[in-house]
Amino acid sequence: MSDFISLLKKLVAAHGEGAAPNMANLEQRKYDEVIKDCEEALTLDPGNDFAYAMRGEAHRLQDRYDKAIEDLGEAIRLNSDNAFAHASRGEAYRSLERYDEAIMDFDEALALELGNSSIHASRGEVYRQQGQFNKAIADFDKALELNPGNAFATEKRGLAENKAKQKPSETARL
Image (cartoon, rainbow, N blue to C red; front, side, top):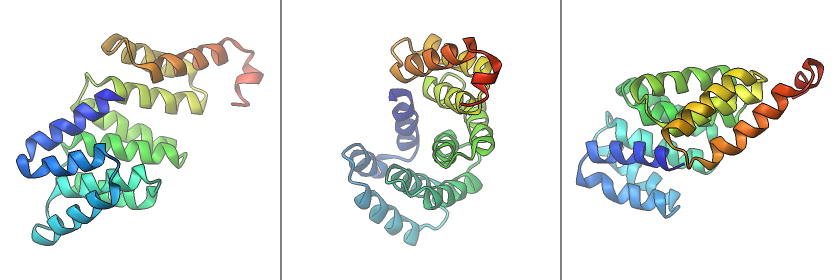
């Protein structure tokens, strides 16, 4: 999801050169290093929303969703305009099948970062998992309009379209 990474890179750029090592470690899947660096940063500055967001993302990528939600929530509390934290927390909620909370976070992330294909695709996937196929297709279409190469949106749009064509009794069994 390259748009998600671009959103993260915007967050890194907004926090200066000191944030770059965290981004490199995240891209290299050195999640424990990211967590360690963020903990050190939070010792020096407990109000560092960037450190909470990065640590939350590292936890999310290690399937530690409760820890991710906690850290990302703190990042949002400190900076409600942090679109990355909203989107990442939405992904954590989606992984836990807490779909209503995921949609609220994706809505907030899109209000801050309307042109992000990945967020549209992620929200579309939540709608698909809920059986709201028309909403899902609309989000996947928007994701593909913004980024025609979004393979996730292409694949999931096809699944949603197939389900939408089935009988209502079949789509209820999603």
